Image (cartoon, rainbow, N blue to C red; front, top):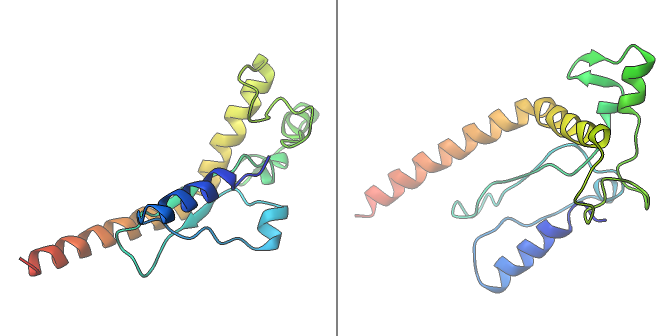
Amino acid sequence: EAPFEVLELTQKYCEEREIPFPKIKLSKEDEKKPKECYVFMDDDNPKAPIVLHFPLVNDTFQKYKAPGVKRESEEEKSFGDFVVESTDSPYRTLNFTFEPYDFSRLVEVNCYNVLNSKDTLFKTLSLALQRRKLKKVLSTSNT
């Protein structure tokens, strides 16, 4: 299950229809071991959206129960120790039902990944607001 497949298909779809969308460029390392958060944007086209992507990743969540708060008890460590991508993983894309424990893990890892990416989120939001102001200035100067 490719963590960037839907994004790449969306990029292709938009490209074919001349809809502004950022290029999805990834390093080999990112393809092998995705990070918790990605920002894709087109610096040359302010009409293209800024895309935030949170692949389902269990990376630093394994060691931290909250950003900066290490797991200590065996129960906490066990809760964070799971593989997202495997043939028998309950988190496969086509699995639509979860056992309560697996659902809790899914919610917690995603919540953690968003909170752990807080700085990236705030920087991206700030950038989006700056771009919006610039668009307004440009549109009023053209009228």
